[in-house]
Every structure is written in structure tokens, then in C-alpha cells.
Image (spheres, rainbow, N blue to C red):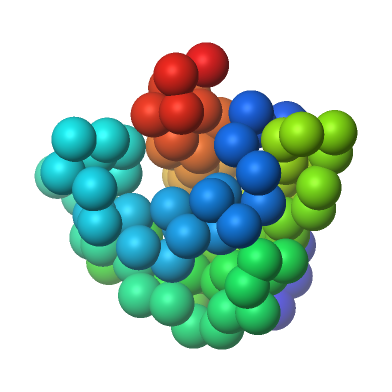
Length: 118
């Protein structure tokens, strides 16, 4: 697997809450945040060591080899969350790669963040 994307940002919720959200994204019907597009599928948990690590299977049937790794660390009263996109070679073309990165960013650093009221 090769790394083809990474982003680190802070979230206002503590690490155990963030890890729980990543491991069970549909557990709270009031705080739904994993809103998938037509070309996406719900992930499964490939690996988890709560609260510091969660690894998702691919969101994209067109790229079933992709994994999204989440490293979760405390940062003040909140969380520093790093996502890493891993794929098997060959890497996607620039257009597809841009789409994959953008979607992870939207889901995690927009939708998940907003679900915490930030």
C-alpha cells in the first residue's frame, strides 16, 4: 500500500468520542454525518485500537483496495485527527485522487466536525 493523501486537523470532541464516531458513524440518528454519494458505500472497520486508531475499508467500489487510516490523539480538550489514504499500486490518476481526497476531507473535517457543533 502506498500513501496518496493525508490531512491533520483538530476537532472539538475528545478522542474517545471521535473514535466512537468513526467506528459507528450511524449510531446517532440525530447527529448523522456520514452522508455518502451515489458512487460511495459505507465503510467497514478493518482495524481499531480505540481511541488512537481506526482503519476503514474503501468507501469507493471503483477503488476497493483503498483504506482510510485515522490516527486519533488528544489535543487540549479536543482531538487532533489525522486521516491517511492508502491504496495499492498503481495510484489513481490525478482527477480520481483529487476526488477521493476531497471526499474524505468533506466527510471528516466538515461533516463530522459540524456534528459536534463546531
